[in-house]
Image (cartoon, rainbow, N blue to C red):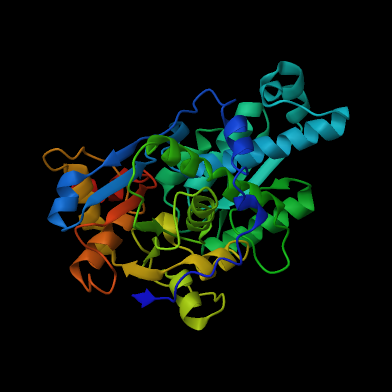
Length: 383
């Protein structure tokens, strides 16, 4: 556990502006499967942990992909496709035009590529399929065959890469540069173009819009927000957009939760600079298994995070079972281990130094069920 001084808000970028989420929402509404996901109250779990309220944003049904990632990659693909059409036609285009036969024919010449642990690849592939373009997804050797099959069913070509996630990121970037493809990364390294990754992270801002709509009229703000992280894109988007749009204030505790075996943000915060971890034993929180922060979002993570928590594989598995079982009035949530990591972090925090972490009966906590099960053969909720 790592505690930080109070937040320093000097690094909030332009894409966290109060109005920056309007375009992602407008564009993704062109997708036939778009619908707001639920913000769910867990009163019995709050009572058991000695907290006032727990709310969890349920992303397990998002866009038929089953992950918040459906917002980022798909939005970036649609936005980049619109820019391509505008370049070809010399005029501004509307989101609905992307689904017209003539425009789809124009877009069929495009190939979008990315690296993925599973869910980002599904989002990019779904966006490309929607507009008639091609997708190529690079997967490292730790990605299960089941996760690869989810991507293949969306029409994408799969390329396997030896090594870890960042090896697949480097391979995808090299191939896109050589073959003239449009790269849609969800992380940025030194000296790399931030354009597409910025769009990915901006797409996640829709979560904040939906939470604001769902909590309209509720007088009590969130006191604690726990967001699980890999390279940090979701956490940065939630923290930055939540602040810019008034969902959080200076007194809101903003926590990062990571797998103990892959805590690149925790270690970067401890070192006070971005670090790259060596590859280690795999974690069941596979969607969070990243070795270094995205340099695009690291300044937000560094300046806004109140603290950093790590959780073990066993703690994540226990959180999966608790959410899947449901308790009394609490609904059952069918989440994957990565999707339960934030709740696992809250359980750990509530059971340790509660006073130092400012957790108590007046706490109103926001969590994110970021994904459903992506590999049922290894899913903790089935045991």
